[in-house]
Image (cartoon, rainbow, N blue to C red; front, top):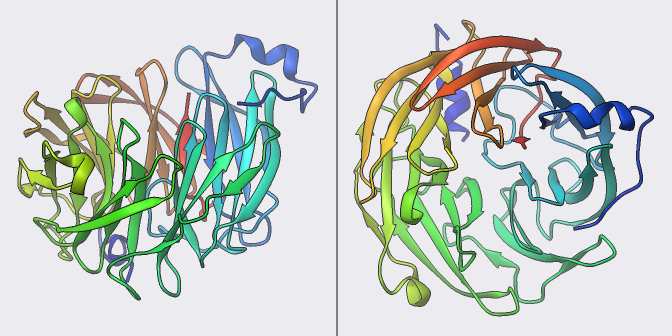
Length: 373
């Protein structure tokens, strides 16, 4: 079951490309770009926005992924990380057609390159490290599968990378991500309250997997802070019981990926906390509290411990149901998807506090997955 959706319904709620658009010469002034995945059921796409110096956005194009999304609304994928960004390309999940798409970009726009089977059912989250790509599928028996991006823009499946999640049928994965050094893969299982740690061989295939019990219920989204600290949100299946925990890897992480809790289930006193983002210096973290229409902020210490700065560091419009978020490359602006009203709320970032800038309308309510540079 998608626990974030249940809580959100409570009351009070590598490859250069040719220019893909005649706008190319006009885009060189952009301070950055924001990408939002529509997740539309008939034809999935990526909405491309130019970022102006003041953080505001101008939509410049919509590029088809050549696959199908899930459609729906209010966190239809039940995941974080449906769209992954690297310095050279984007990778998007197509939950409705059981494949993933590779898209390249430059200052002139975004271009579809290739797609590949996700080697499972209903892909919901994807992660990259160098030329490695891994996806987690949540349907049937949930599993992960890996790929390499080839020089000609293809996704080549890695033999030995297809691995079922330890929790089996109904485990409910929330996100997949490489650790910052690329040595391990992390997957959260929302319904089994487990955190899966996959070791990798030199060829990118799976070497082993260890499952660690989450310190609280319903581990969902996660991100990495200072010294590789792992921060995981927990909705706990209750209206106001959302928490966040931090973990550090043991010295023998290359052997078995053991996680050691640091801060255990820090109360946020907000509802439906599912998505986590960490600033690029690793010192501050933010969570979207979907059913409270708020964003909480935290300080990440050198030892991996967490301190709540504000459980309401920023507020989105009432009933907007904030979900996915992304930070601009310069760290100045936070972009938050409003799942109910089809909006993109923009905040300027001042360390652990946020200042509302404006709202962009017209985002599909099926949208899931956002990235910024």
